[in-house]
Image 1 (cartoon, helix red, strand yellow):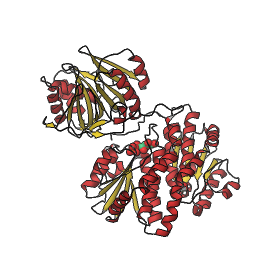
Image 2 (cartoon, helix red, strand yellow):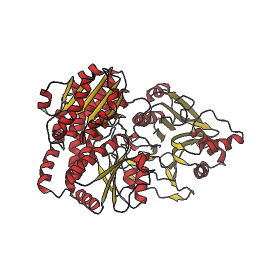
Image 3 (tube, protein in one colour):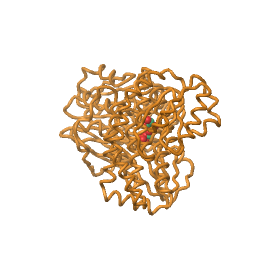
Image 4 (cartoon, protein in one colour):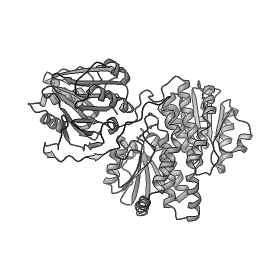
Amino acid sequence: MCGIVGYVGRRNARDVIIHGLEILEYRGYDSAGLAITEGGRISVVKKTGYVARLAKATERMGGGCGIGHTRWATHGAPSEINCHPHTAGKFTVVHNGIIENFAVIKRRLESKGRKFLSETDTEVAACLMDDLYKGDPTEALAAAMKKLKGAFAFAVLCADCPGEIFLMKRHSPLVVGLGDGECFAASDCSAFCGYTDTAVFMKDGEIGVMGEGVFTLYDGNLVKKTVRTEKIGGGAPCGQPAEDFMKKEIFETPAALRDTVNAVFGDDSLKKRIIDIFSKNDKVVMTGCGTAYNACLMGKSLFERVLRVPVEAEFASEFRYKNPIVDDKTVVVAVSQSGETADTLAAVRLAKSLGADVVALTNAGRSAITREADLTLLTAAGPERAVAATKSYSAQAAAFLCVATVLSYDMKTVEKIREEICCLPSLASKALASAGEVKALAALYGKKRSVFFIGRGPDYALAVESSLKLKEVSYVHSEGFAAGELKHGTLALIDRDALVIAIVTQRHTAEKTLSALYEVKARGGKIMIVTPFDDLIAENRFDAVIKTPPSSGLTAPVTAMIPLQLFAYYMSKERGINPDKPRNLAKSVTVE
Ligand code: F6R
């Protein structure tokens, strides 16, 4: 959460920073601020709301060195006072992460007479650096690092060193970009990949100093380290789409599926490594958070069906604290679009410490999770900027299906499944054709206060994910659960105001799920069905129908998610909400 950007060079630092912050806005958008050094003076501007407000307020700023921040509030409300950068004495600081012992440090500094303006942990860190400063900012940062507990990435200006930016990292991501006579810093290299393709991914415990085209790296004891660069994909990142990123990204699902399937099936060495890592283990655990966890539910269902092996699916946030039953015969599949979710990363580290093999299923090739994993499976979904995960979820489900096929011994069945998987992109395109009808349904049900999703087997996994999608972008109360559970309690919530959506892609449980749906109708609720089965639709007993493209029970759930994502999107628009930036959320949750 929170995005940080820094720049030193000949360009206008304000322009580079604003450009970077706009790209990093997916990490938080409560407020934004920047600090620029010009003529030996540091000027700070902060604004609540989106980066666009900050951009307007800083149009006339010059100067070639500065830092910026887009915030997702942890300590203190999203007000201008709490917005970064924070200044204490000679130090002006932007920060991503959480300082766990900030209250203790704050009390100690207050007893020395220090005063604080904000409620943030960041101002405390800035004050600590200033307190420890004896003329060398790197020494102050190194000393501060020894006292700070928690996760952080800092970019720091010191009034005595105009033209330099000081960096420090533990657990939160920080990448430096090296250009000709210029240096960039950011939480994610997408913020500067339009300017340079050479990057340094800082490691935990490192301190860096950026000047005009010079970057020096130290360990926590200020011993100089060799700077190792990596090539990143250059080129300008995608601009704002005509409508919303969420819609654009749902419509990119066919390409995401095609590229993900090709990435697995087209790489023999990857297939061999998949077989090696799974076949030497006795147990499979899938873990992730939010939508990525919901993809684990889908993965569990697909694996168990294709491979007939038991799979556990665990929230990463639970896994990390439950003393998990994992050992050196376990393979843990960590699913994460961003590859940097703090809970998932902690689960990965715990699994590794217990001797497990870790497979990362991620959309971000150079992310923290890939650096810890024994094997990385990339979903080739392309960048996802909307907060709600859409095409990445579909790509994760497809990747699970591909891996299950690679691992299966049943050659006859595998050939058939492979053919079906290769049809996924065209099935997804057909599913997208329902957008107009889905939009009309959102207009019809836009004022509903409660929407329930039900399904069985893989459709249960879809129900949970559909519900999460609807909640996060439309703020409608929603629950997703196993269809057979409705009568065991939740049915009490059904009245004329409720909408229940049944997802039915599995022939063998179709009738059972419909029975649950008719129980809702009998109690006055509205019922909708999402299904590829014409005979069910012909029953004509539903208030609304979304027809999905017919395919096998293994691939139908992957494409059925598309109209459900569209439903969430259009409900969001119907209710006047910005689907790309729903309240209180951020795309990348790098704190606990
Ligand atoms: C929901 C959503 C979140 C993320 C979750 C994990 O649409 O995007 O629930 O799925 O925060 O993020 P990643 O996949 O980046 O680990």
